[in-house]
Image 1 (tube, rainbow, N blue to C red):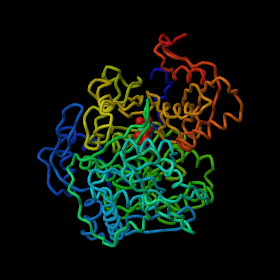
Image 2 (cartoon, helix red, strand yellow):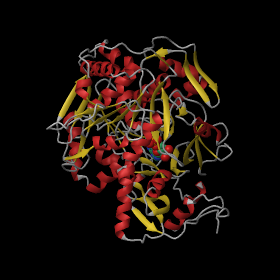
Image 3 (cartoon, rainbow, N blue to C red):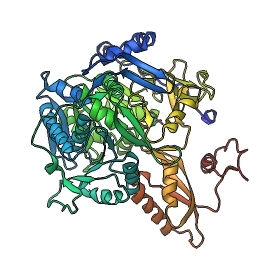
Image 4 (cartoon, rainbow, N blue to C red):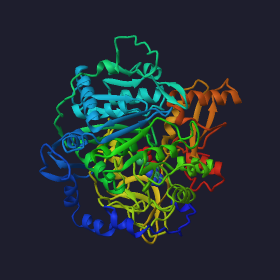
Length: 628
Ligand code: WTA
């Protein structure tokens, strides 16, 4: 439990230049928070009124614990706010997307161009029979078409389910099946470090035993173009219609916009469902205020749209605000460790949003790389996905931000849709601490009964009140949704352990469940275990997270072999390869130990906590439920 953590509560404090507080939109955090807490619904209504609706709501919110409806009975289409609004308000020729390829190639889309491409794609999807409410699985590299497809789905009311292209066959298959996807869109390949990495081959295997899939659309990027065989396969460009206009589907605020899968403690990944109205308001609001996004900003979020960070802060948030986003298919160390800094220099990036793993990797490669480039365009830095340790904070602040740029360390989840906790630009920053609730959010640290714990005592991170972009259900598993809101009192339980200091700043201590965060990506122990057990050699497996200086945590597996198999280095490699093929490279165990038994409760549940304590030389805590 939380008390096991040795927490250093004192932290250095960085006071940003007062000019920042005066110029950013939410410089006066306390005043804005007070305005929110006095009348939460009026606060959110004011935000929603900044956007375009086909029909406004009868009521801002209806709360029937644990079910919320936001902007009740309103009608909208999120793409009208991402595209039409800007095209018709003088931003036709403003740059919406700058794409940089792995080899430095560039593609630029103005709002007008993006609008036309989305409409052609939306008409194309329609011509293939995709209708409102149908699910479309997008398994694509980070290219503009990935964004175009996402928006095209939203335009016609289809539910997009983006799957990160680093996932393997098994992971993709289970996501396609759970979402009942009618169409899967992919590309022939992605380019990583100058090399071609096949994607379509994975899709071919993943659609076997997925009867809902009618067509596979393939973006062919390579020359000579890959052959398309069966009648099921359609070329992306042939699917596009010539007509660059497509009326927006009328969506109720509570109609689903997308499903996005995230790893859980037990069983397969959970399909988190977000809806059109509330999600739109949350993504718009947080981008506008946490990043203080302005008209002349160039905003670079290094995530992939396959994760929630990409949904909210590459696609929807920036486009809802009429911003300019930069995306790149490139990796941070190819062709050399200066490539990302060269992109900031070349494109005058003003806001840079990345993950602690990347920052730690850059730290290790040394300050000489960023120092070669002019980073003077930067004005705000962000971090997300895992704890930003004080050493990484310091490096980011001094070497990249040159002590000028505030750092917003943003805590949130796939389930929350938008940022929940951060230190707003202009506020004092404490390395190691995230900060406080965003205005609009009521976060706290409580004990298992829901009672707030005093400063300095570890507890569970909860959100006490509903917010517009909260998930509405877990697809095909509403019971699992209810658990989020019924585990600790009537609060939303985030699954993280945290502690507050005397100023109310929150520090994240880690997960309270068996989700492991490797390089900022959530990996469910259960998913990796079941991938291992699907190998003929494995009888039982348990997977834990082990601290790692660069990646935050790595996966370590304990494996009991079936009779007839003997432990060997070769078998270890085979098992690692097996997980790579089924779940993808991001879920590969870094270490495997062959063991004769695993610690279990009397009911047969593996006690990963005990394994982890033993591995790390820690006290295993309460072991009274241990079998022997
Ligand atoms: C962790 C990513 C510390 C946390 C947006 C959370 C963080 C999980 C931070 C959600 C942060 C996210 N500091 N930990 N700034 N941001 N986390 O769903 O454990 O991929 O519960 O959403 O990542 O991961 P998810």
